[in-house]
Length: 494
Image (cartoon, rainbow, N blue to C red; front, side, top):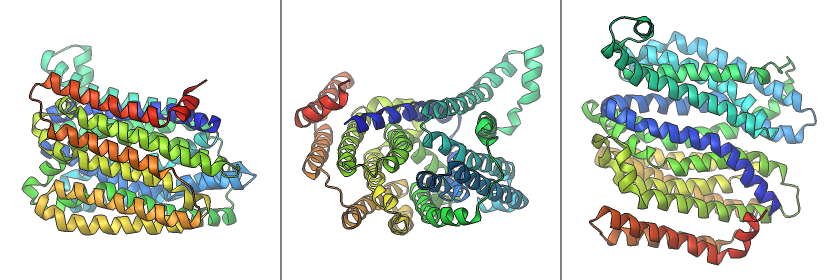
């Protein structure tokens, strides 16, 4: 239980930066969805979707390989140097080659006017890739506070610049015609560029600032490139690259594909509306991200303890309880949460329960995935991820032309459910962990029943409906406490 408390503490610290970042990102959604039209917001999402997929190739699993070999190799500095040098070299080649073809890339995205956007994002992706290894070093050294601080700097810069360019600059230009402030704003802001441009510029500047704040870690780099070690890192990392690519495709492919399968006149609109609703599932995805930041070094560090598998099983149960609670919270209060996005974007909230279910499945998969990482069988993880990607691609091609973004949501659901089941069954043969399936299934059934009750009992008055939904959420918490009272008390005790 002490080890679980340690993981909870680390998750909380990593979670602060992750949660605040995602919440601020979410709070920008009302700004974007009330200032941008669905087409422009769709463009915003498309660019970030491509970034998510390409970034995986730029990091190519080296982050996880660094964690693994920091534990296996006594010379941790050599592992760090080799990993970071590798990322710097490949990122530099990426920038040089991609900038040369930025115009062609913009045309492929469907609009040659996007060339400047493409160039900015090439630099953003390279900077973020280089930052990945210093961030991994902080996590491996359990320097969660510095990790979170740097993340906060990135968040603050990005948020501040968004507010400056999107709200303050137009206000100053509209209100004033002379003066020092007006002259400064007039020099750095041009309404003709459009708000989307300044969203991207804010991201670029934030990435540059992040690299600057990581310079103390980067300056610790020594030219110590061990080719034999690099070969081992690549061998371990390559399946992780495949896994990361498959996950990115599973998450983003539907939105990317809509840009090509739907008529050009409605594609960006559908992508924008769908993506705004995906943002409403932020609480669940941010918890999964915070957990992954803390869990990866934790699982590797404790694998040799005699009760390691018991700890992993307990973590899985608590993880699922929290995931279900967060999902119910989003669904039961959706009538309030949806007010945070513009009215033009609310038509897609019907897919939120589908998406949340998929996020629960993939969260469980992430928890299960340590069986192939701890046994150095990352190729198995790649096979699972590729299988999920195949499901995603096939179903999106079939369902998007018929059902639009709803088809994409069901594709995500089917993909993540299949991956979860396959990982569980395969993991039992390779690295068997006795999970408390009876209680886990009981929690899943209870959460599904509570959701069902909330849909069949239609209460017109908003206050009465929210009161009833609050009671349903309390019922779930009460059930969890009654079933796992002893373990929860031990976990929460000082």
